[in-house]
Amino acid sequence: MQTDTRFRMASRSMLFTATSIMQLKEQNKLLLDDPVVNYLPWFKFKQVTSNAPLVTIEHLLTHNSGLPREVSSHWSNFNFPTNSEVRGWITQRQAAFSPEVRWKYSNLAYTVACMVVEKISGMSWADYTNENIFVPLGMDASSVDKEEPELAVGYGIRMPDGT
Image (cartoon, rainbow, N blue to C red; front, side, top):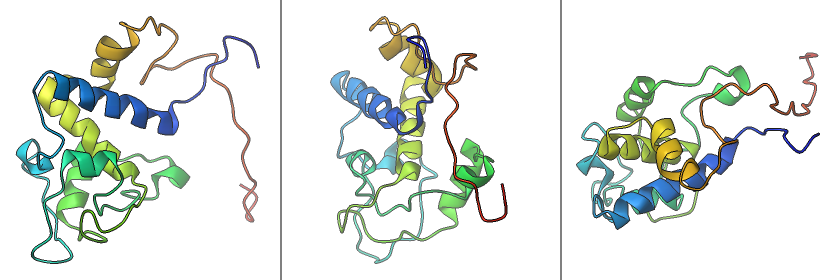
């Protein structure tokens, strides 16, 4: 490893997503207790109970939304869902539990939070993050969606089938 070795963003993207949401809050473009459906009208799924509260932006950021961890098995097959596929998946599913019932780590919730950023800002999440976080902080070696030749290659576990 060298001083200029780059690493995948992975779950650190949650920090930048939460920062983006808080920037939009500071600009009075959203409130944390706003229901997500106010910004993403398609964000409707069957709740566990008929009187469950609507999922708010805060629920997304605090892993308290009732959404499952993932949309699919994309971490094993690297076939990551498009925004359209995420929308379709959500509208066809039931929540695992009602919001505020328990904490459950959810990459899906942060994916939806990114979609809120995109809807409010009118920019892709990658462009928003670059323009509003990386550039102002002088993070010129950071990116969301650029191929990096210095990217570190991690270790993996050999599966029983040899892959």
